[in-house]
Image 1 (cartoon, one colour):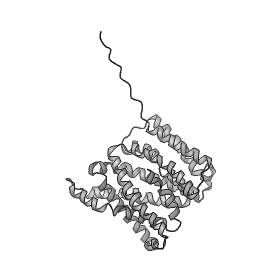
Image 2 (cartoon, one colour):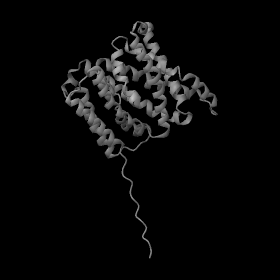
Image 3 (cartoon, rainbow, N blue to C red):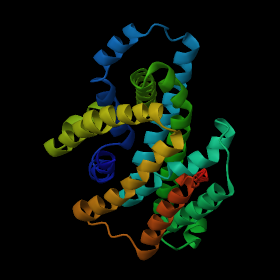
Image 4 (cartoon, helix red, strand yellow):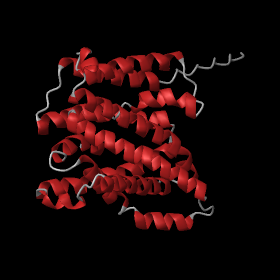
Length: 295
């Protein structure tokens, strides 16, 4: 989660010099390349090969969890702030709690409903910095925040739907396939938009190093680790750990970019974290009565 939190100030820093979707392409292209030999090895070990329908399903999930997510993330941070990016793209436990009953038959209790409502209030505080009229008036920052929320929704949907493939085939295979499909679709979009893929060569050396970090460390390793966690725990539990990211993200954005969040934004941050705690908290298990000892 600490590695993921470094994304937001780095993206905010680099995206001023390169088109957001070109940056996104390099992030995921550099992400799946190191995984390719391990993917081939893992694929050969599988006793039950993937069907064409499963490959197509995972590829479609790549468009949701890679293409749509990255477009919302990179453009959202460009229009908003790195701190808001760290929070709003990691409101996934709220979306997971909403989507769970619809997609994986998860029971939505009254406690979870209250947590969702509290979380929505917290998100609204962050999006508007306490000025709710801004939602009606619009503006680049509000649009950026809404794009960041859309990115969070996309990744929540991806995490829920990718789980069954991660359980069946391990985390590496669906991670690699979804990355390749999502990256390919980003390349197609950039080609249609006539974006020069070599604009990365005109960047300062430090920015190029940061892009390498985003791809190899921040994407290849983190996606693989998170999808592996999905095999071992419920989706809602795994995504809840992402609420640690905004705490680190706010601190890093302040230290390296000088971003100073307003009081309403800070209240919103803690409100969202509280909502996730409420959503994730399990009811206390009943303590069984001790059997009476016979004399």
